[in-house]
Length: 341
Image (tube, rainbow, N blue to C red; front, side, top):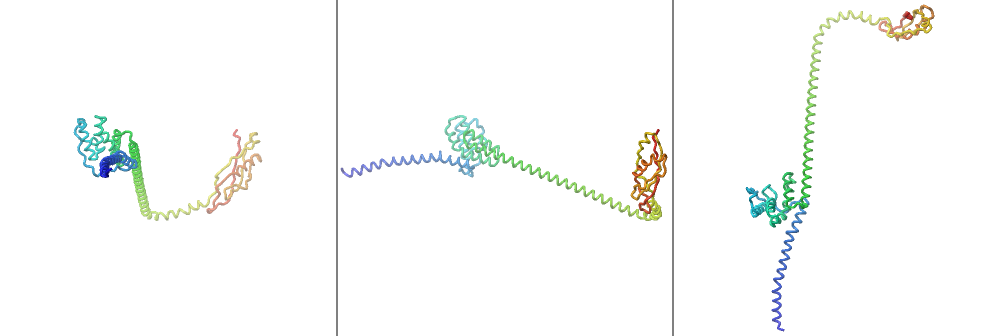
Protein backbone atom coordinates (compact mmCIF):
# COMPACT_ATOMS: atom_id res chain seq x y z
CA UNK A 1 0.00 0.00 0.00
CA UNK A 2 1.27 3.47 -0.85
CA UNK A 3 2.34 5.36 2.22
CA UNK A 4 1.09 8.64 0.78
CA UNK A 5 -2.50 7.45 0.98
CA UNK A 6 -1.88 6.33 4.56
CA UNK A 7 -0.67 9.79 5.61
CA UNK A 8 -3.57 11.43 3.82
CA UNK A 9 -6.07 9.20 5.58
CA UNK A 10 -4.51 9.94 8.94
CA UNK A 11 -4.67 13.67 8.27
CA UNK A 12 -8.33 13.39 7.32
CA UNK A 13 -9.09 11.49 10.56
CA UNK A 14 -7.22 14.10 12.59
CA UNK A 15 -9.08 16.92 10.83
CA UNK A 16 -12.42 15.30 11.58
CA UNK A 17 -11.50 14.68 15.28
CA UNK A 18 -10.54 18.30 16.04
CA UNK A 19 -14.08 19.77 15.75
CA UNK A 20 -15.42 16.97 17.95
CA UNK A 21 -12.79 17.62 20.64
CA UNK A 22 -13.46 21.36 20.50
CA UNK A 23 -17.18 20.73 20.87
CA UNK A 24 -16.60 18.41 23.86
CA UNK A 25 -14.36 20.98 25.56
CA UNK A 26 -16.92 23.71 24.91
CA UNK A 27 -19.68 21.57 26.43
CA UNK A 28 -17.55 20.84 29.51
CA UNK A 29 -16.75 24.55 29.99
CA UNK A 30 -20.42 25.48 29.57
CA UNK A 31 -21.48 22.86 32.12
CA UNK A 32 -18.82 24.06 34.56
CA UNK A 33 -19.94 27.66 34.17
CA UNK A 34 -23.58 26.69 34.58
CA UNK A 35 -22.73 24.66 37.68
CA UNK A 36 -20.85 27.63 39.12
CA UNK A 37 -23.65 30.08 38.43
CA UNK A 38 -26.55 27.84 39.45
CA UNK A 39 -25.06 25.68 42.23
CA UNK A 40 -21.70 26.76 43.63
CA UNK A 41 -22.19 30.53 43.78
CA UNK A 42 -25.71 30.41 45.31
CA UNK A 43 -24.44 27.85 47.84
CA UNK A 44 -21.49 30.07 48.82
CA UNK A 45 -23.77 33.07 49.08
CA UNK A 46 -26.23 31.12 51.19
CA UNK A 47 -23.44 29.91 53.50
CA UNK A 48 -22.13 33.47 53.83
CA UNK A 49 -25.61 34.68 54.75
CA UNK A 50 -26.07 31.86 57.30
CA UNK A 51 -22.78 32.87 58.93
CA UNK A 52 -23.81 36.51 59.19
CA UNK A 53 -21.92 37.58 56.09
CA UNK A 54 -23.01 39.67 53.14
CA UNK A 55 -23.30 38.40 49.54
CA UNK A 56 -20.39 39.34 47.36
CA UNK A 57 -21.97 42.28 45.62
CA UNK A 58 -20.51 45.74 46.03
CA UNK A 59 -23.18 47.87 47.66
CA UNK A 60 -21.10 50.97 46.94
CA UNK A 61 -22.12 50.71 43.33
CA UNK A 62 -25.77 51.40 44.02
CA UNK A 63 -27.22 54.22 42.04
CA UNK A 64 -29.75 56.69 43.39
CA UNK A 65 -33.29 55.30 43.40
CA UNK A 66 -35.50 56.37 40.56
CA UNK A 67 -39.03 57.53 41.11
CA UNK A 68 -41.60 54.74 41.10
CA UNK A 69 -43.95 54.53 38.13
CA UNK A 70 -47.02 56.67 38.56
CA UNK A 71 -49.55 53.88 37.96
CA UNK A 72 -48.23 50.40 38.70
CA UNK A 73 -51.62 48.77 38.16
CA UNK A 74 -51.67 49.89 34.54
CA UNK A 75 -48.22 48.43 33.67
CA UNK A 76 -48.17 45.29 31.56
CA UNK A 77 -45.77 42.38 32.01
CA UNK A 78 -43.06 43.77 29.75
CA UNK A 79 -43.18 47.14 31.44
CA UNK A 80 -42.98 45.50 34.87
CA UNK A 81 -40.00 43.43 33.73
CA UNK A 82 -38.34 46.58 32.42
CA UNK A 83 -38.89 48.32 35.76
CA UNK A 84 -37.56 45.24 37.60
CA UNK A 85 -34.46 45.24 35.43
CA UNK A 86 -33.83 48.89 36.24
CA UNK A 87 -34.22 48.15 39.93
CA UNK A 88 -31.74 45.27 39.72
CA UNK A 89 -29.15 47.46 38.04
CA UNK A 90 -29.62 49.98 40.84
CA UNK A 91 -29.47 47.13 43.39
CA UNK A 92 -32.90 48.04 44.68
CA UNK A 93 -33.78 44.47 45.58
CA UNK A 94 -36.30 45.12 48.38
CA UNK A 95 -36.31 48.86 48.96
CA UNK A 96 -37.72 51.40 48.68
CA UNK A 97 -41.24 50.12 49.16
CA UNK A 98 -43.16 50.09 45.89
CA UNK A 99 -40.07 50.65 43.75
CA UNK A 100 -37.90 47.54 44.05
CA UNK A 101 -37.10 44.50 41.93
CA UNK A 102 -38.89 41.94 44.11
CA UNK A 103 -42.18 43.80 44.07
CA UNK A 104 -42.01 44.26 40.30
CA UNK A 105 -41.25 40.54 39.73
CA UNK A 106 -44.01 39.52 42.13
CA UNK A 107 -46.43 41.72 40.17
CA UNK A 108 -45.29 39.94 36.98
CA UNK A 109 -46.01 36.56 38.61
CA UNK A 110 -49.38 37.82 39.73
CA UNK A 111 -50.18 38.48 36.07
CA UNK A 112 -48.27 35.47 34.65
CA UNK A 113 -47.63 32.86 37.38
CA UNK A 114 -45.27 30.83 35.15
CA UNK A 115 -43.19 33.72 33.82
CA UNK A 116 -39.67 32.23 33.61
CA UNK A 117 -37.86 35.57 33.73
CA UNK A 118 -39.46 36.66 36.99
CA UNK A 119 -39.14 33.19 38.55
CA UNK A 120 -35.44 32.89 37.67
CA UNK A 121 -34.65 36.46 38.73
CA UNK A 122 -36.27 36.04 42.14
CA UNK A 123 -34.38 32.81 42.74
CA UNK A 124 -31.00 34.21 41.66
CA UNK A 125 -31.31 37.53 43.51
CA UNK A 126 -32.77 36.05 46.71
CA UNK A 127 -29.35 35.91 48.51
CA UNK A 128 -28.61 39.55 47.68
CA UNK A 129 -32.06 40.66 48.81
CA UNK A 130 -31.65 38.64 52.01
CA UNK A 131 -28.42 40.52 52.64
CA UNK A 132 -30.31 43.81 52.40
CA UNK A 133 -32.90 42.53 54.86
CA UNK A 134 -30.14 41.48 57.24
CA UNK A 135 -28.62 44.97 57.04
CA UNK A 136 -32.01 46.42 57.98
CA UNK A 137 -32.12 44.04 60.97
CA UNK A 138 -28.60 44.99 62.09
CA UNK A 139 -29.39 48.69 61.78
CA UNK A 140 -32.47 48.07 63.99
CA UNK A 141 -34.87 49.47 61.44
CA UNK A 142 -37.35 46.86 62.65
CA UNK A 143 -40.39 47.94 60.62
CA UNK A 144 -38.40 48.03 57.39
CA UNK A 145 -36.72 44.72 58.22
CA UNK A 146 -40.09 43.08 58.85
CA UNK A 147 -41.43 44.44 55.55
CA UNK A 148 -38.44 43.11 53.61
CA UNK A 149 -38.62 39.68 55.30
CA UNK A 150 -42.33 39.47 54.44
CA UNK A 151 -41.49 40.37 50.85
CA UNK A 152 -38.85 37.63 50.72
CA UNK A 153 -41.40 35.17 52.10
CA UNK A 154 -43.74 35.96 49.20
CA UNK A 155 -40.97 35.07 46.77
CA UNK A 156 -39.74 31.87 48.47
CA UNK A 157 -41.71 31.01 51.62
CA UNK A 158 -39.82 27.75 52.27
CA UNK A 159 -36.32 29.24 52.13
CA UNK A 160 -34.37 28.48 55.32
CA UNK A 161 -32.79 31.94 55.19
CA UNK A 162 -36.12 33.38 56.35
CA UNK A 163 -35.87 31.41 59.59
CA UNK A 164 -32.42 32.87 60.23
CA UNK A 165 -33.54 36.41 59.43
CA UNK A 166 -36.60 36.13 61.66
CA UNK A 167 -34.47 34.79 64.52
CA UNK A 168 -32.02 37.66 64.13
CA UNK A 169 -34.86 40.19 63.99
CA UNK A 170 -36.40 38.75 67.15
CA UNK A 171 -33.02 38.79 68.94
CA UNK A 172 -32.37 42.40 67.92
CA UNK A 173 -35.81 43.43 69.10
CA UNK A 174 -35.26 41.77 72.48
CA UNK A 175 -31.82 43.35 72.79
CA UNK A 176 -33.21 46.78 71.92
CA UNK A 177 -36.01 46.29 74.45
CA UNK A 178 -33.51 45.31 77.15
CA UNK A 179 -31.30 48.28 76.37
CA UNK A 180 -34.32 50.59 76.44
CA UNK A 181 -35.36 49.13 79.81
CA UNK A 182 -31.82 49.59 81.14
CA UNK A 183 -31.83 53.18 79.94
CA UNK A 184 -35.18 53.78 81.64
CA UNK A 185 -33.88 52.17 84.85
CA UNK A 186 -30.77 54.34 84.76
CA UNK A 187 -32.88 57.43 84.14
CA UNK A 188 -35.18 56.49 87.03
CA UNK A 189 -32.19 55.89 89.30
CA UNK A 190 -30.77 59.27 88.32
CA UNK A 191 -34.10 60.94 89.08
CA UNK A 192 -34.30 59.22 92.48
CA UNK A 193 -30.73 60.27 93.24
CA UNK A 194 -31.54 63.85 92.24
CA UNK A 195 -34.67 63.81 94.42
CA UNK A 196 -32.70 62.41 97.34
CA UNK A 197 -29.99 65.05 96.90
CA UNK A 198 -32.66 67.77 96.75
CA UNK A 199 -34.33 66.42 99.90
CA UNK A 200 -30.99 66.26 101.72
CA UNK A 201 -30.21 69.80 100.61
CA UNK A 202 -33.61 70.98 101.82
CA UNK A 203 -33.14 69.21 105.16
CA UNK A 204 -29.69 70.74 105.55
CA UNK A 205 -31.11 74.19 104.81
CA UNK A 206 -33.88 73.58 107.37
CA UNK A 207 -31.39 72.52 110.03
CA UNK A 208 -29.26 75.57 109.26
CA UNK A 209 -32.32 77.81 109.70
CA UNK A 210 -33.14 76.12 113.01
CA UNK A 211 -29.56 76.56 114.21
CA UNK A 212 -29.61 80.22 113.22
CA UNK A 213 -32.95 80.71 115.03
CA UNK A 214 -31.57 78.97 118.14
CA UNK A 215 -28.43 81.07 118.02
CA UNK A 216 -30.51 84.25 117.67
CA UNK A 217 -32.65 83.20 120.65
CA UNK A 218 -29.56 82.51 122.75
CA UNK A 219 -28.09 85.88 121.79
CA UNK A 220 -31.38 87.62 122.69
CA UNK A 221 -31.45 85.79 126.03
CA UNK A 222 -27.87 86.84 126.72
CA UNK A 223 -28.68 90.46 125.95
CA UNK A 224 -31.74 90.26 128.21
CA UNK A 225 -29.60 88.84 131.02
CA UNK A 226 -27.08 91.63 130.52
CA UNK A 227 -29.83 94.24 130.82
CA UNK A 228 -31.25 92.52 133.95
CA UNK A 229 -27.86 92.22 135.68
CA UNK A 230 -27.98 95.72 137.33
CA UNK A 231 -31.46 95.04 138.76
CA UNK A 232 -30.35 91.68 140.13
CA UNK A 233 -27.31 93.31 141.72
CA UNK A 234 -29.56 95.88 143.41
CA UNK A 235 -31.89 93.19 144.78
CA UNK A 236 -29.04 90.99 146.01
CA UNK A 237 -28.71 92.65 149.49
CA UNK A 238 -32.42 92.09 150.24
CA UNK A 239 -32.14 88.42 149.28
CA UNK A 240 -29.00 88.07 151.34
CA UNK A 241 -30.80 89.45 154.39
CA UNK A 242 -33.67 86.99 154.02
CA UNK A 243 -31.41 84.03 153.35
CA UNK A 244 -30.35 83.25 156.97
CA UNK A 245 -33.97 82.85 158.12
CA UNK A 246 -34.77 80.51 155.20
CA UNK A 247 -31.60 78.50 155.76
CA UNK A 248 -32.25 78.24 159.50
CA UNK A 249 -35.77 76.90 158.89
CA UNK A 250 -34.45 74.47 156.33
CA UNK A 251 -31.66 73.01 158.53
CA UNK A 252 -33.78 72.59 161.74
CA UNK A 253 -37.10 70.65 161.65
CA UNK A 254 -39.13 68.04 163.55
CA UNK A 255 -39.80 64.51 162.34
CA UNK A 256 -42.66 64.21 159.87
CA UNK A 257 -44.78 61.06 159.38
CA UNK A 258 -44.44 59.78 155.82
CA UNK A 259 -46.21 56.43 156.09
CA UNK A 260 -48.61 55.24 158.77
CA UNK A 261 -50.08 51.78 159.46
CA UNK A 262 -53.51 50.71 160.65
CA UNK A 263 -53.55 48.48 163.75
CA UNK A 264 -55.04 45.01 163.59
CA UNK A 265 -58.09 44.83 165.87
CA UNK A 266 -57.69 41.98 168.37
CA UNK A 267 -60.13 39.16 167.61
CA UNK A 268 -61.23 38.63 171.21
CA UNK A 269 -61.88 42.35 171.73
CA UNK A 270 -63.75 42.52 168.43
CA UNK A 271 -66.00 39.61 169.44
CA UNK A 272 -66.59 41.11 172.87
CA UNK A 273 -67.33 44.50 171.35
CA UNK A 274 -64.58 46.14 173.39
CA UNK A 275 -63.24 49.59 172.56
CA UNK A 276 -60.25 51.46 173.97
CA UNK A 277 -57.09 53.39 173.35
CA UNK A 278 -53.34 53.07 173.75
CA UNK A 279 -50.69 55.81 174.06
CA UNK A 280 -47.46 54.53 172.50
CA UNK A 281 -44.07 56.17 173.00
CA UNK A 282 -41.22 55.52 170.54
CA UNK A 283 -37.96 56.83 169.15
CA UNK A 284 -37.51 57.97 165.50
CA UNK A 285 -34.07 57.06 164.20
CA UNK A 286 -32.04 59.27 161.80
CA UNK A 287 -33.09 56.77 159.11
CA UNK A 288 -36.78 57.52 159.72
CA UNK A 289 -37.67 54.20 161.36
CA UNK A 290 -39.25 53.59 164.83
CA UNK A 291 -37.48 51.92 167.72
CA UNK A 292 -37.89 51.50 171.48
CA UNK A 293 -41.65 51.20 170.98
CA UNK A 294 -43.46 51.04 174.37
CA UNK A 295 -46.91 51.52 175.94
CA UNK A 296 -47.17 54.71 177.96
CA UNK A 297 -50.82 54.34 178.95
CA UNK A 298 -53.82 52.27 177.87
CA UNK A 299 -57.50 51.79 178.56
CA UNK A 300 -58.30 48.98 179.13
CA UNK A 301 -54.90 47.63 180.03
CA UNK A 302 -53.25 44.81 178.08
CA UNK A 303 -56.10 44.45 175.56
CA UNK A 304 -54.89 46.60 172.65
CA UNK A 305 -51.19 47.00 173.65
CA UNK A 306 -49.66 44.53 171.18
CA UNK A 307 -51.79 45.68 168.24
CA UNK A 308 -50.83 49.33 168.88
CA UNK A 309 -47.11 48.58 169.21
CA UNK A 310 -47.03 46.48 166.02
CA UNK A 311 -48.74 49.27 164.08
CA UNK A 312 -46.28 51.92 165.32
CA UNK A 313 -43.31 49.69 164.46
CA UNK A 314 -44.36 49.93 160.81
CA UNK A 315 -44.41 53.74 160.76
CA UNK A 316 -41.93 55.62 158.53
CA UNK A 317 -40.84 59.22 159.14
CA UNK A 318 -38.81 61.98 157.62
CA UNK A 319 -36.28 62.30 160.47
CA UNK A 320 -35.81 65.43 162.53
CA UNK A 321 -33.11 67.81 161.22
CA UNK A 322 -30.64 69.82 163.28
CA UNK A 323 -28.21 72.14 161.50
CA UNK A 324 -28.98 70.28 158.29
CA UNK A 325 -28.23 66.83 159.77
CA UNK A 326 -30.75 64.04 160.49
CA UNK A 327 -30.98 63.27 164.22
CA UNK A 328 -32.99 60.90 166.44
CA UNK A 329 -36.10 62.19 168.16
CA UNK A 330 -38.91 60.86 170.41
CA UNK A 331 -42.63 60.97 169.95
CA UNK A 332 -45.86 59.67 171.46
CA UNK A 333 -48.90 58.52 169.47
CA UNK A 334 -52.42 57.78 170.79
CA UNK A 335 -54.13 54.99 168.89
CA UNK A 336 -57.84 54.43 169.42
CA UNK A 337 -59.75 51.18 168.92
CA UNK A 338 -63.51 51.25 168.33
CA UNK A 339 -65.98 48.74 166.97
CA UNK A 340 -68.14 51.54 165.61
CA UNK A 341 -71.26 50.40 167.49
